[in-house]
Image (cartoon, rainbow, N blue to C red; front, side):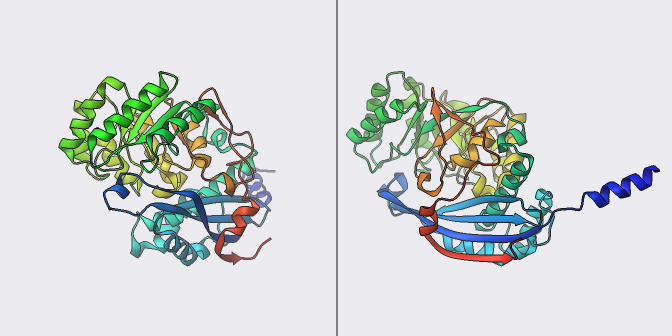
Amino acid sequence: MDTIAKTVSRQQDASPDSIAWIRLSSIFLPLKTPISDAKVLTGRQKPLTEVAFLFAEIETTEGHSGIGFSYSKRAGGPGQYAHACEIANVLIGEDPNDIAKLWIKLSWAGASVGRSGLAVQAIAAFDIALWDLKAKRAGLPLAKLLGAHRDSVRCYNTSGGFLSSPIEEVLDNVEQSIGADIGGIKIKVGQPDMAIDAQRVAAVHERIGGRAAMMVDANQQWDRPAAMRFGRMMEPYMLTWIEEPLDAYDVEGHAMLAAQLDTPIATGEMLASALEHVALINNNAVDFIQPDAPRVGGITQFLKICAFAEAKKLQLAPHFAMEIHLHLAAAYELEPWVEHFDWLDPLFNEHLEIENGRMIVPTRPGLGITLSEQAHRWTRAQAEFGKRP
């Protein structure tokens, strides 16, 4: 058989798979207690009582499947779901291997609402599901499919250090986190009275006693002079980072802090596109970049951010959604951190393991998650597209 005939034969044998069916679910996760950070104490937002999730489940003509999700806090969840329903049909019949191509197709399907914010957050659920599908088809954990540098990632806890918790409760949570083998403790700061923040930091630092790393998070609370003043107050504590000291879009201000403070600056979680992160990176405005895959449009966009960050030798500490970010952090060149939140545990049948301050990358194919019965009970809306194979 000549070369041309062999090529044609291989093409015929490799009949391409195609997306046959999609199910979108709007799921609302209630929190046990209302959560407050600096934005609540200063009247910008109300306490957080629930998290809205957009789940996408995809199946192909050859029987492969994937699951992905996006989320929103306080507002936007119904909007994400509505936009996803508007654009889902463009994926039916497409080859699931062409993930980057399909991201562009989805973005053009909703081009009039832009390529950041809610629009790309809706795309994220599809994109993450396609990566999950691809890794499952290969029989690999997503981290291995991407090219893992490690089998576990340093993890730190945030959920025990909110400003809505009195200091006694925060200190108890410190002990619980260290007892659970978590490697770092992050607490919220940014109260109207900076002296109270300083007292809470001192108390937590003393309680940790060198047993874990420590970070603080101001949730965009300060102006530039206040952030500089607080940053200088924190120097003796040798914090791993100060997070979101300024408005998320104040690139120049973050660059000033990063240049003048010894304590590293971390930010990026609130940015809603890859290009917004590139602005931080190119302007030397951050030491720890904190992208959130569901917020920037999924894994395809997250990987673009990582390429820029690696070139600058920046540290990586993805925000929230540890079920996704554990895999992405494991595939980052420099030693990263991943944020531990147990809020999402009821949504999944599987749970992540922690040993010696590190979160273990699961060996299950793909993301290694399946929706629980409880998640189905919390579902408020659902839509299907195509025909299930």
